Length: 100
Image (cartoon, rainbow, N blue to C red):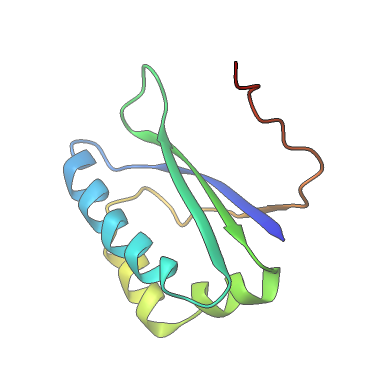
C-alpha cells in the first residue's frame, strides 16, 4: 500500500466549484483499480486550503489513474491555483481507538 498526499489551494471565491469538481474526480478515482480510501480535509481558518489523502494498492496504480486523459481533463477543470505536488508514504503504524 502507498499513501498519496498533497495540499491544494483553491482559487479565491471558488470553494463551491472546487468541492463539486473534486467530488466528480473522487468518484472517478474511486472506480480505478487499486484505489482505496479518499479523504479531503479543509484547513481550519483557511477556506482555500485543502489536504488530500488517498490510499492506493501501489504507486503504479495511482500513477496510471492520475495520468489518464480522463483524470487530467478533470484536474485541469478544477479552480486551483497550481497543480498539486504529490508526496508518497509507506504506512508504518495505525492506531484504532479502544472500544469500551
